[in-house]
Length: 275
Image (tube, rainbow, N blue to C red; front, side):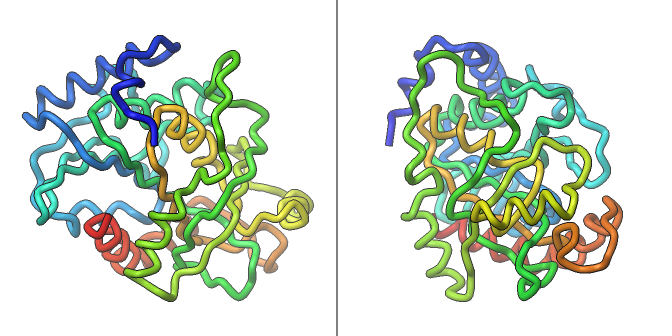
């Protein structure tokens, strides 16, 4: 893995802003270094309470470069948690989504801030559509790889980042030791905010995808560039369009996430404590 200090000393659009945000978080929480960063997607909000002792929390509005997206189900705050083993975890209750303003640099800001706090690992979660009818809503799936269909990247210029093992095999192995029943899948990020059409879902499946959604791939690219080791976990909140006859709605996605939240969040907390 790359040394995150290389990132801290780097010159790249957005790095200065990430360092500013990290300084605000360090001063507010009184924690010199956070070891792990976590980004929570739909259905994962209960993870915070299962992790450990809370050092404090701060609204997105008080952190340079962050702002609320106004989307129901997205928690707009950052929480610092101390694990039983003494490590400190920085938990973002939501992320900046590409569909909000079509700005990949804004999307990258969260993981760059995590790197700037000194973390070496980031856990990225999301709620997603599942392409396998045998994988029921409420099922967590490890991300083994991704396909970026947004047509953009947070990288600028000749920044040739190796994405061979974008989702760290080491971290996936730890997750499977915690829960051997966990399966893996390829996540396909669309630009959104509209849900995918049945034809687009079929295309994703033919490309090798198992999960579809509107986040995570861009975050992962930025995280790998910043030297972070990545674990990705999706919570299947609905079947992809056309997989079943059911129509898609954001309200149903939220409801499915809330129903699965206690079990999924405890699993995620157990994995984070094992890293």
